[in-house]
Length: 289
Image 1 (tube, rainbow, N blue to C red):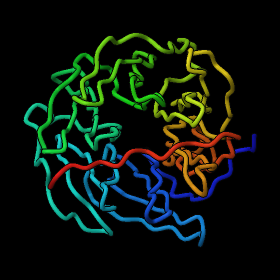
Image 2 (cartoon, one colour; image 1 turned 60 degrees about the vertical axis):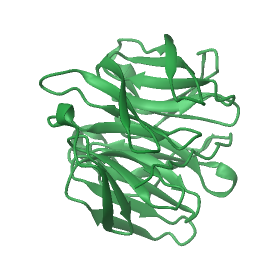
Image 3 (cartoon, rainbow, N blue to C red; image 1 turned 180 degrees about the vertical axis):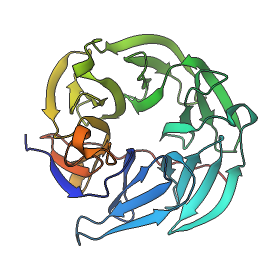
Image 4 (tube, one colour; image 1 turned 90 degrees about the vertical axis):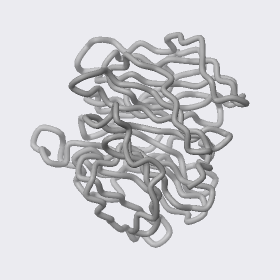
């Protein structure tokens, strides 16, 4: 495996949600609290920054190529090339003191979207259906984080960073319902291990999990056994996704760019890794606006 290579250094406070845009052949990601969207073209080496001005907890790519932004106060907005085009949801009354954090489109174009713990309630997991209706699925979540699907599309992974657990659910593609939660991986309480954060699944059905505070990404077999880990020169590794030609490149976001003395000289940069395994394309959202 190759050593992680920094490809774009914006020194993000909380770099997150890297996602390969299949139509544009570019990688997108965000800096959550400052509300910035970035994109990078590996062919030309060019990168761009767009300032939204409000926290962006995550996004999906719509079937038409626009980005669906999941933001503060439960807002969901459509964005393309520097412009917010429309609002899908202005706000969720129960999430006025919170924000979305990590989202994923499912095979039918719905979006599973988690929220952070707020002063008045714990984190939650919602499902945004293609007709714009949103349904709460889970409550009592510490820090809602990385999601993914098994290759047979019968199960879904879901991460609670604060509880240091990655769960496995039964997933019904026809309805979008999830059930039968069980623990897939429980991360050690050793502070050096960090907490499980973003997640993706490779072509072999293995799960990659970023370690916030643990300076690494970890690959697990479908039975939960750790297979390998790749170390990073920064403390807070937040998320990863596959992209590039044949999905052979892994792009990894990091955080802590405002405190590089403690977090690492390249904290907040976007890295690229040759993980010696291919990824699979993420699903596109199909939420009607």
